[in-house]
Image 1: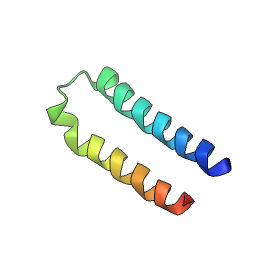
Image 2: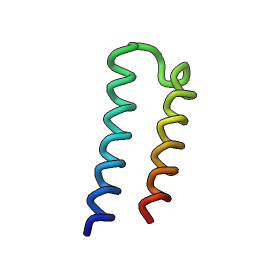
Image 3: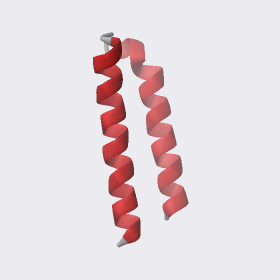
Length: 51
């Protein structure tokens, strides 16, 4: 149960990070792609630590 809640928190947190980055910087998605990929990479890395 704890693993599921931590995974869900990571997923929601990464989704919110992408959305907030877009809203705050007001740039196109493609210009912020490296930041979004870094968020995705960290999320996958932390998810592997959980499992």
